[in-house]
Image (tube, rainbow, N blue to C red; front, top):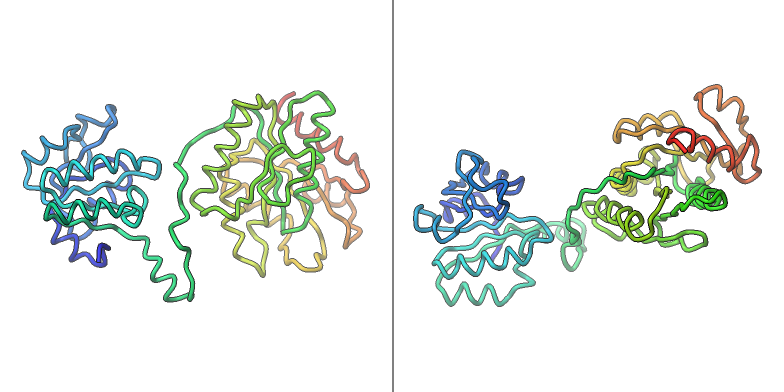
Length: 350
């Protein structure tokens, strides 16, 4: 009843005053059936400047009085729910219809707003996430939209080392923990960050199951955790355990999760783990994963951590093939964890 289901709905609500001179506002402005009467934004840096052919304003009442708008469209990001609610109430008071989105102001969580609009004789509509269509095709759906975190941007000035892998269960958690432990032994205030619910063992400093989050929230959660480790824990260096792989076959579902953690980590360098002849996973291999990591994120794979549980690989041959240090943490072969950390410290600068 309150969801936008076609471009005809936009035509009936036009012209719009769009709250939010950003990506969401531009997307709505360009949509078929949308006529834009003006833009408004709280950012003083945007006010008074041209955006999509309009000068960005700061006063909603003034915009309503000076334009032929019928609807105020609130296109604000997650985290701006307070501002979205303020504008919705003001718009209804000014006799305007309201268009919102599940990101900025989900109507299912604001039934009083629907009642207020009905009492004022105006329409209130929502650009829905259309989870009903997920239920239609899959037979199940989340109770509510799971994308809930503000989209922060944070890049640590301290070294961040990402531990990736060619598959699940190939040695990422062990490698991350042992690297952090060795760094701590050397007097470095290293922090070990696990992105899995099983990352409970000492000396891990913090963990959560990244797979429980919306893929849109994972980078923010990773950046937020790095920010916390920087500002609260005063980290000298951060080791982050990745999940799954960008290229593993047979189980495509965690690939997006793997990429999202990598994007949030924005690592200075990567240690890549590999388990040959994996008994219940389907890794493509070191070369493919290495290229994938360096293609999707501006970072560098600098060393290999090899799990030889199912194959007695030659570490020397791997080093010659990939021109990278290759060690076995379980036996400390080829320098083990000490050489792996030495390689990292040499790369990032002690």
